[in-house]
Image (tube, rainbow, N blue to C red):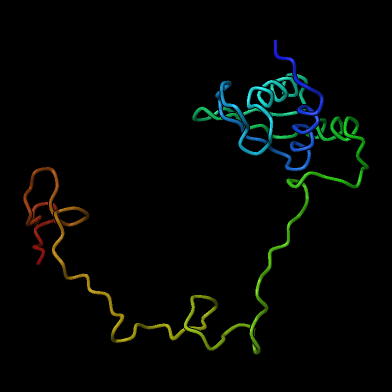
Length: 162
């Protein structure tokens, strides 16, 4: 049985509510958790307790414990930490990505040679032409099969490949 001080438990619960997820290594001898200034065994035991009550879901992979906050867990932590209903974990808040504004003119069929919506020329430049003339190593279609050799004339109905 592990006795966990109140300030450690509160720090763990605050971190779980703030992030919405927590990860801890399966190492009960580790002196400190990677993200919180508490022993790793305390994090493991608090998360184990919350998982058994249904407030966290647990995934274990490659000697790491992954815990995810459930909706019941959010309500429980709001009650325990005395938080208002407007506050939500980072996993539930929608993050806006900072995208650069479109250049003037915008729209389809721009000046670029890009892939999108027919803005490019549609054919290869002279310096970009691909060459497929190299010799393979007998992989792929057309080079025999079933022990017929490299010519493949039997497998293609009498036609020879060049």
